[in-house]
Length: 338
Image (cartoon, rainbow, N blue to C red; front, top):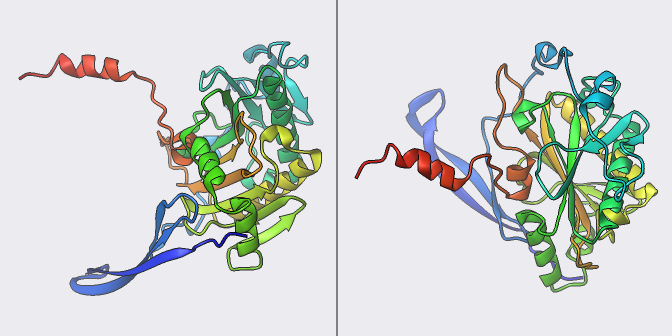
């Protein structure tokens, strides 16, 4: 086992007191360094940003006249997969469905619905069974894509508009191509460069039983990260599982139970929105990388609000824009004078 360095720096900021701005007070601030990437996180003290109560979502989640993901419309509004990937057309597992994505995020991409029979499923209703059905569908699709050739794969989710979701019906999306995302490539590269046998096994050993340790089920170890990327971040590591295609039915069940438990916790914390990502290990297999699932909460839903930051930006360090730099330059150039 290689030693993992949990490095942090304690600094002090001098700021005006919130209720008395003429008074200057000292406030501690902790900066933590991620042991694998070297990325830093800042842990603040004082006023918390977490909500004290859940907002009323009734207007947002009301069933609209048309939703392509609801059972009454899905056969008409969605396509079917190429027979070279699956002969199922649409992949059905329980009440879930995996269908082709109309948005070209990757060479191959899909959309997965936790439950087509319900327009909205709240966090406390995303049961282990519902999540397991969804994830089994994504595994089946990923295996079909990888039968064409090995490639990078991820499964990801935006939930409600503050996470960047454009549709309220709860869903997740998969992405598959020869390039992966910035975060995927970095995770695998840094894992391969780790001096020990496996960073992920070493991390589990170092964290087990500690203050950030949540628990373990089968190969799935659950913890919170030393240097979080976002609010209420939780990790699940499938130790020894190199890619999404390697997930067994037992892994999927354990991972689904973990995901459902986190969703339920978010509900109890009055949270309503999140991003999650499951990072595959890429086409060049490496036993130094283990499959990582990561979730962060996002701001609560407000009327007429949708964030332009999705899981791509938040969890993959990957910008997603709908206008080319050249088109932006042309638009600005028309108004630019020298």
